[in-house]
Amino acid sequence: MASNKMWCTVALGFLLPFSFAHTDFFTSIGHMTDLINTEKDLVISLKDYIKAEESKLEQIKKWAEKLDKLTDTATKDPEGFLGHPVNAFKLMKRLNTEWGELESLVLKDMSDGFISNMTIQRQFFPNDEDQTGAAKALLRLQDTYNLDTDTLSRGNLPGVKHKSFLTAEDCFELGKIAYTEADYYHTELWMEQALKQLDEGEVSSADKVYILDYLSYAVYQQGDLSKAMMLTKRLLELDPEHQRANGNMKYFEYIMAKEKEANKSSTDAEDQTEKETEFKKKDYLPERRKYEMLCRGEGLKMTPRRQKRLFCRYYDGNRNPRYILGPVKQEDEWDKPRIVRFLDIISDEEIETVKELAKPRLRRATISNPITGALETAHYRISKSAWLSGYESPVVSRINTRIQDLTGLDVSTAEELQVANYGVGGQYEPHFDFARKDEPDAFKELGTGNRIATWLFYMSDVSAGGATVFPEVGASVWPKKGTAVFWYNLFPSGEGDYSTRHAACPVLVGNKWVSNKWLHERGQEFRRPCTLSELE
Figure (cartoon, rainbow, N blue to C red):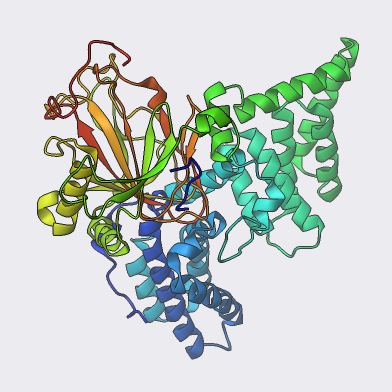
């Protein structure tokens, strides 16, 4: 065939699912969807209270009406709603911060019904780590996909179902979180956005004085003394008695005078500011640049000559009896390393079964410490995962058999089926699936050798982002529900193929479910014989 691809109402005070016994909600959209019902339950409880004391609590009634409309929309399509990263961040912020503020507001004159419900529910709420994690995800998406603050604040993202926007207070919160991380680059961006929205007339509880205080310091930390002085002057116009601003202004004037004495040119200052800004962006990392470009659909492109060598075909698993009469659709995604995609290889019914089996077990994804071998959470892997055995479900067993038939590899020595659900801005930064020579004991406990190959199911479509990219070679593989991709991690000689270094790009909009099977060396001796040439 030609190289052109041819296929082409909840009871009050209810007990939450046991899966809520742990935190890290922001690392899995699948778990965050249950928070929608939690928040809806709180709104219902709150509205019941308002009916009883409406005359005294007009402010709380307005709050409830606003949240009522939002949660009604969210519960109709939880995954689609939380697929917008702004909605996910604001959910974390509401449940971790704003509901607590509401509780303090009404404590003086509150019926036992709402307080008791809040007390029961609150133990299952997201915590500070979740809110911070969701905020960092927005900053990560901003960098990876080159989004300006206004675009992100207005919610103008591709493929969104439920458009949402950030208030000036939300922008201020993002800036504060960046500030606590000493990330002055993002502090400046989001404090300026908060200030811009207030200057445009947005009514908000955010205070310009506080915003300018953070903003001027963040700008100073990045070397722009003139702008820091200008912002500090604006702050003092609003609050002439601001102690820190007055102290900063004297210090800035002193530094400026010293610079003039040293005849330091403004050009040098601008060059230094630009260098520091670039450092904050961490654009100096070559792999990072390639990774982010591929995530955006940019970067290396395959030459027409190489493209012509890619084909689509009907594949019978090397005359496997199960597929001779009903072969599967297969197409080449890349040549070196060879990456193939199987189309319509897992049904919607099978996907739902796998998700339902996995969801109660989803835990924060872990990685193996190369020194100790112990499993630990990693900030560069934002997802939750679960492991499914073939003996516990006929569906999982059938999937395992399908992988064996189509790869020709023995799955009896493979790891269990791993199911992963990515959270807000969910990603997995560049990594190898196989163990390198400096990690001789990585899979020692399994006793099945190194990971010879990877099989990856895509169990959902992703509206924007979420590609699997290979920075070493410039390949981008985009999620498509019901398909799977397969590649070898090792050469036939047993040596690792370093061109298979890959990453899962942050999910910009949508919800990403995948499942993967790591096949090992043992049992493949006669299925994929070794060669004498190291790189053959």
